Length: 296
Image (cartoon, rainbow, N blue to C red):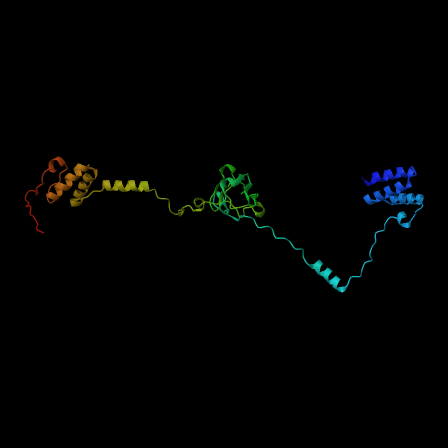
């Protein structure tokens, strides 16, 4: 029964002159506590009515307070040492899996070195500038990694792969900037520099101001025109004539020219393959000249 209920019943017994019951109920109320000074006074009144008044029944117990003992020199030194000793800071718990990353022009490749993790135990979500990685293998401590990323990404272009020794995550960059850290908290105040591709950084060819850029097509046309209009004499003119014929001839004409010229020792040049293809071409020296065969 609660102390307040016992106190109420004790008061009723006191009013009914049942001082013995009242004293008993007051004692039970005090034991049920917490007791007030009035409760001790009411119990004392009940004992007075019974004629067995005692000092113990009339007073509430006083808590004994021990006098302070003067601190010794050793105690003062210990207290000073404790004040000057820095508090022990527990080191942060080491993550279950180690991770690393590297940059390319268009993406950041994050590797979490989780060996032998089932693919169905890995859940990865991509946000505009957030990454959430959860690895929960039954019977093992769960792993959660949720950084705010250094820069924005394109979630729909991001992907990951669970391999036998690691989880590889490819973050598609929204901007071609170099990530100096993975987490936004380590991002420098300066605006990240844009990554330049080799094509953008390669110097463009420059030409001296004193010389105009050559028009090679025009130059080639001029050379061909000069060759066409060139006037040659003697053997040079004849050789050019033969070269022009050979250059514009088809395959049968070229075969006929080669066969007739070789077999006739340079005295016959035919372009008719049907005429010279089935027989040996005999030499035909010019009038007044004699054909001689050379022995090797």
